[in-house]
Amino acid sequence: MTMLETLMKKRNNEELSQAELETMIKDITADQIPDYQISAFLMATYFTGMTLPELTHLTLAMMHSGDVIDFSDVEGVKVDKHSTGGVGDKVSLPLAPMLAALGIKVPMISGRGLGHTGGTLDKLEAIPGYQVEISEQDFKQQIKTVGTAIIGATGNIAPADKKIYALRDVTATVDSIPLIAASIMSKKLATGNDALVLDVKTGAGAFMQEQAQAEALAQIMVKIGREAGMQMQAVISDMNQPLGNKIGNTLEIEETLDMLKGDAPADLLEVTLALAVPMVMMAHQADDEATAREMLLGTLADGSALAKFGEMITAQGGNVSVLNDYSLMPHAQYQVEVPAPATGYVARLDANAIGIASMRLGGGRTKKDDLLDYGVGITLHKKLGDPVSVGESLMTIATEKKQIPDIIDYVLEHVEIGPEATKPELIHAVIK
Ligand code: URA
Image (cartoon, rainbow, N blue to C red):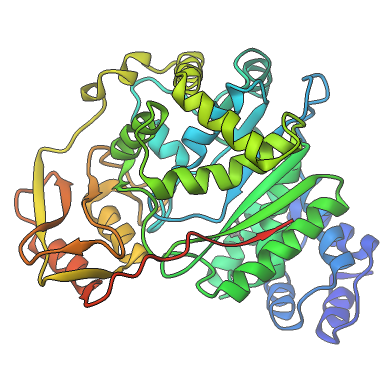
């Protein structure tokens, strides 16, 4: 079947076969289909959606468009976690060493930040010397010896997704549930893990602002993963306000280290546990949630998770002295306070706006090749529902510029102080 015939079928809302989807992805990967035909396919899919068999075939074809990591020579269940992205979302950083401290294998291929959400790799690069680009062989070796590694994509993972994503970006077809699901799951399946827990964010700072959309995306990704033989679970978590208190690369490593030393913001700890508990159970290390939770908290109390994080830093060439000396990481020159405009309770602390403010300070990218200021960022002193008095500091901004009135005004436009103390629910749903 030619691409034109595939397009006619898709336009007419007929189900595409495995062979048709495989041929299309093979030809896209080989640069044999012009962008206008791929774009037409994307727009047709945006409007007609996909059946589960179509979506599974599309995802598997995209997964096989490049390298598939083979972890069969690494003993034990390999577990992974994926978040759809949020502001202050540093969960992978404490979660991986907590699980590895329990003997669980956690190979993680992470991304860089683009736009208002930070990237795990950028945060790790605030640690002097930390290498995110390591070979597949070293990656596997580190999983065997340390139990975890957090790295950038090795080699050629799901090249079809790279091409398709670049066109989605310029054809207004990014926010299509089947296309997002195939994009994320093709890359996750190609990393060769046995089990995956998804953190699908919802709220002002999330890709999926409505909970119903977030749940639909999570449901479909869980189904695709299971069809492909992976153990799957998903958590729908809140992203109306940033997660934890610190936003920015160095600042988020500091908050991670504090958490691994037993001093975690309550929301960061709860979301980390909501994701890590099912991972412990999928790795067959506990039979029930309460036991898994106790085991995970034990790794914070006895210092074993902190020690594991140190082992991972050392294995990837980083300076492990940062564990006890945060001054070894880049820090911004100035600290500017943002005073509360009124007395009451924090009623809005827009995650999207805080992420954009951090990006404008230089902590995130607006273009792919932007260089980062690792030391800039925001430390929140108040979160949703907290009481505050007029003039009290809501947050401290770490900046390279002495005067930042535009950023302060921007942040304050997205903060509201109200008469009632309302805390948001952190975990909106769990999809088992
Ligand atoms: N992340 C991805 O990897 N792909 C998408 O389509 C959206 C988010």
